[in-house]
Length: 194
Image 1 (cartoon, rainbow, N blue to C red):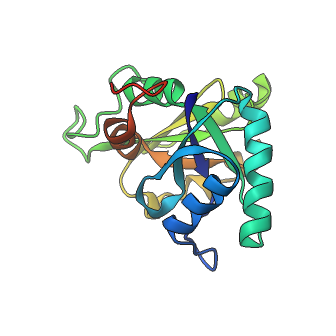
Image 2 (cartoon, helix red, strand yellow; image 1 turned 135 degrees about the horizontal axis):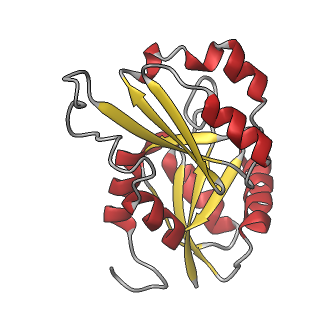
């Protein structure tokens, strides 16, 4: 059995409220084992014999649509992939979350977003080209990273003409601090403790 993580988009935002206990029940009813949730923002850890993450995404989306009554975009990664994300440093040390930058300014935060599949090379290049004094983007396979200085709520980069022109596919995002905490709490692979 493989351990996987389903990152669910827009859970517990707006009118899309669901108790984590209900999410666990839906995953268990779908035949997944060792189901756990991590914080109330749509992170579900589970065990499965299935290996095709694209098929798992489709299956989970169907289960959630039937169980909750609305669409929930789902991004599945193996636990090993999530561990690599948690341990990675895509900006080469330029996105320190624990301190200010070299010019004495505000600390940088690092976020990771999930695509269903890697975007076209032209889309990835256009996305990475959108930069501001406070924002940098990097695409690595099925993930994208956002280095942000300042609060997310204050970020106006998403409404710029350059970003709107990129036409990104639907995605979901997590703070890498949360991803590291998820791995620390649930980081065991193939039924073995880390």
